[in-house]
Length: 542
Image (spheres, rainbow, N blue to C red):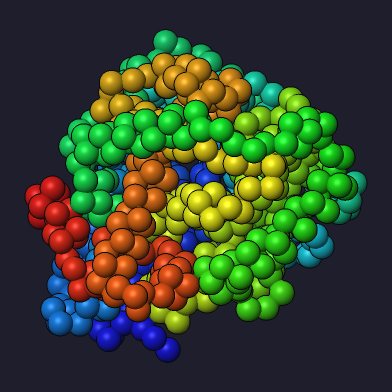
């Protein structure tokens, strides 16, 4: 097995990740989902938070005492990966402090674990049903912990967003579980659902009584944001450099939208029905795999795993506000299909859903890449490379792939997908600029929503969700743009070094397999160049 050459490092990493799978917060994002141990329930009591801090400090102390030979670059990279993961623990607990500032955090901790279990396609075995019941019964405890942890520290914009989300949350939870009970009978559903729904309604009422809230400031500040950029994400760019890069890419995106494209007006007009859409998506998935092969871009996944659409189940539809309706599978299911759940096509659907309905290749070019990349990383010989560290490499690869497909003509069939991909370039540049401004306190979530709705443009509901998510998850919004630019830098550097011998397919195969590894570390391991990592360390002051 291709593990690190340092037994002490491998042992520490294994212990850390066993602990992390029990303690990592749940979130709306699909890339960060964790496969939990069988007996797990969320716990954000004061004792649990204290235990997280103590364990994190213990891991960090052991980490500092591990010595890896400087010539063993692979082991050095694995060590820095663990350092990034440890820095994220501090980032979450002590710098972002969502557990103290953001009431939506506890919506995620109490209900996203239920939602994630519903995402996996049927059948619902006894173990999964037991887990859903266990999490429903735990909702009151988590929301009681929320009251204790949030008192006196609530950020107003986060609270107002949470109240909007909670307005019908109890009814939506009842609807979802009633639909599940109709398909998967179990005598425990009524009591477990009723208790969870009452707790959600009680949390909403408690939160409403806390107004006016303690502060309107949602920013983490310049020092904390720099900690994230350089010690978690290992980026070699300052916040101002990120903003400058984003604005250059914004100009490039706006320019690209002025160029004439051969879009078939009929393709963007009448929408398909659901069965036709699913058929189109499966044909597009096969065509994309052929495109990769014929152009020498990427090796196909071994096995039968595919990325496919499926009709939105009645038990899932009421809860899609809890997360991306996409099941990329998990480490123990790496051969299973990745599934994108879709509603019946309608012009009223939000920005991303409507684009994917008009041209399924838009989803395949991004979410399909996540599914491919995650499957490869879950099968990695080195356990240290199977984990999520930061979104920049994952999202950067997917965004890079979109542009790769656009440049090579995959969207040149008259479909509206090309228009969306170009417009999404504008969105990703804007996300990075907004992310920095929110983190530094230069922009409010409401103002960010206005900018997104008008400048992309996009529907108001998607703009509100984006603004709230990025305000509560600093550093996430910039990951698409910065990650893509890092990938392009790595491609260009490799191509210059190897000249005519450069093998783009081999490069892509490696990039996808190592897609969890921050790109400054990939640059060091692949090219022997520490310059980006050294720059990140310099900016971090370490």
